[in-house]
Amino acid sequence: MAAFDDARGWGTVRGEDGEELFFHCTAVADGSRRIAAATPVTYRRVPGHLGQWEATDLERLTAD
Image 1 (cartoon, helix red, strand yellow):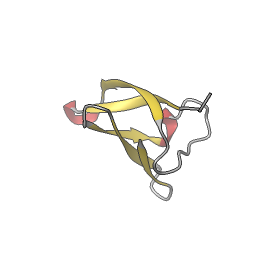
Image 2: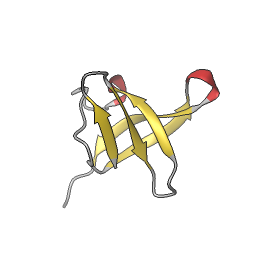
Image 3: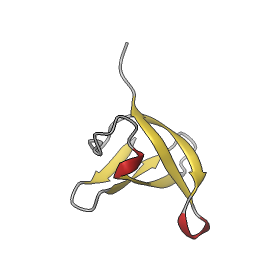
Image 4: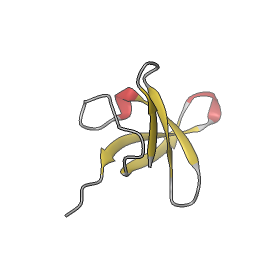
């Protein structure tokens, strides 16, 4: 699930393991630069700034 601050252009995602990762709006894979709060997403965990992990390649999950 994602949380996103539109004004600042960044947010966080929380994985199934409970880990919370920062992401920047440019990490949204479809280029929209926005994710609605509580949207289920997939992402990759990558090394980020200041030695912390970040989320990238965020994609919205769709119900099939």
